[in-house]
Amino acid sequence: MKFKTLSRWGAALLAAGLAFLVFSPLVDALTAGIRWGRDDANRNFTKRVWIDNQLDVDGAVNLNSTVNGNTAIRVLNYEFYDVDVAASQTAVEWGTDASATVGGASFKRIAAPVAGSVIGVTVFSNAACTSGTLTADVTIAGTATGLQAVLNSTTATTFAVGTQAIDTDTFTAGQAIGVKVTTNSVFAPTTADVVVSVIVEY
Image 1 (spheres, rainbow, N blue to C red):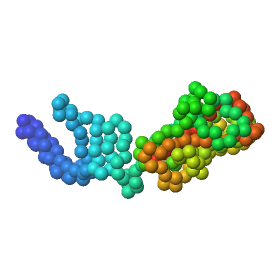
Image 2: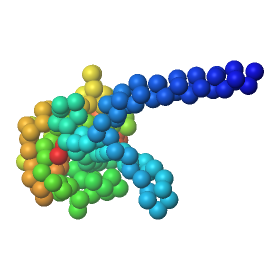
Image 3: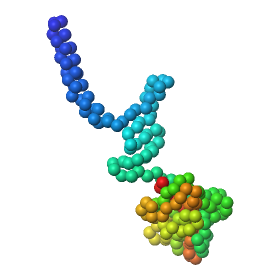
Image 4: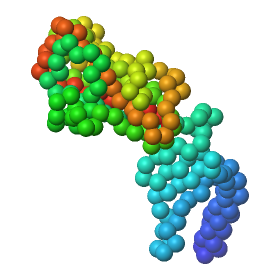
């Protein structure tokens, strides 16, 4: 009986050894280029994982190079506001403080921290447009780029989107990003509060 028990243990160990020899190269191949961060003080693995030349994960995801052969981008979102939006506005520059008329007179543009390009704009209203139109134009250094989104009373009553390809309209570090809004004479309701979001990549 003792001999049979030892034989079973021997067979189990032999099977484990063979499995290691077969699967170890496969695991090495699958994890090639991956390095796991370690907290040396506590000798524990941290939440950081490096995938060489592609991805750095440390709580948030940072795209540093390429993913599946595609150039990675980083995106920021800048928001501009107005409360009780009036009709008959013509290229009125909105600001970043929703508590004051037309977004706050002192905060109408946001300086870009690095060079990049504008790739999208969204408009959201807390009340559906029942008449007329509201057009939001993205600006760089105060000049309209041509990227815009339009609220109307039929197909885009509370939410409108405009997008364009990367590098269509570019900016340099320090240039100001903003929006100018136009409403026609019959735009309603004039009690609507509206936020315009500008999406940039760099």
